[in-house]
Image 1 (cartoon, each protein chain N blue to C red):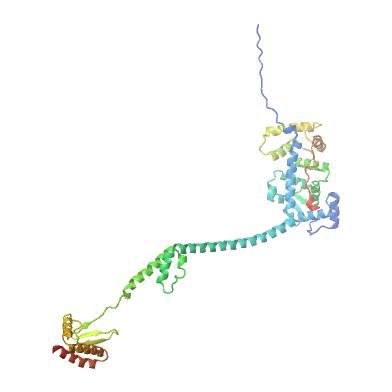
Image 2: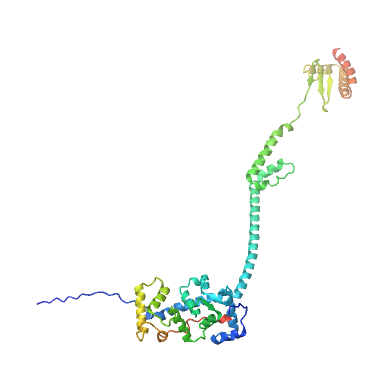
Length: 183
Length: 223
């Protein structure tokens, strides 16, 4: 890897198709977009490059969303990771995959568990100064008491899945982006 | 015996509940979905090739429109200038007519109209001053009769030539009544008078004839 090319080879396209829902034409189009973001022509995007886009720098959840794409946590996003993460937002993607995306948003240190501090950090990131620290702690306490079945003091993925699924929340409609312009 | 029951109450804050008693994950999922979708749309729209082409085409159109606007603005400025000239012509019509009457070509000096009202009035002042100074030249030239030291009379005819004349009859008012009396008395005197007139006409031609004729005339008057 590392050699810059204008188009993907057929083998690479087939490899990416196996891990994503997109068709060959869609993958080619996504690769064109990816090349525009890859300013240094080295086949991957720096995480810092996302912050330089004006529309994204105002997004309070930007650090957590970038972590969705950066699977290796090395500060680089290659095209394979890019497409694999994007396919989760396809309307045809599996519901479990979408809930995994949410789990990754809360799991800051990527250790497979959501702790009390992590939930408070995410909430503070979302609500800003609208809620006091005591209110956030109260909310987190209630949530953990409901979802933490075994009393571990933190949540693993099955606990998170049960918490999301049991409330009847419609996850299919959320975390979905229409890719109609590609079809 | 009466016993008092004393109850002491303490208040504790009510715990904060999310709407509909939702938990954190369900409550926050719409927000996360919105932000994630927003980010992805920005990423995917940032480098759309078709939009880039549209933008370039749009720039070209903008340049052409700018040129058209510039031309339109130039035309507007010209039309406003013309309107200003026309209003000046209307307001200062009298002044302009006077200036035209003074100048030989019956036209205003070039560029005077654009200089404005003050320039027109100043030009009119110049013309009036010149006219006033030149007024003396328009009068009739004065008649000039001169008598030298000998008492001889020199007269100037219509051509400006100077000639000597001994005839004082035309100048002295006393002589006129005498002539009138003589004419009434004698018919010969009438003939003499006619000769006198003829002699005057002859004097206009040459000087020699004048001398002879003058002598004859003097004798007649004295006798």
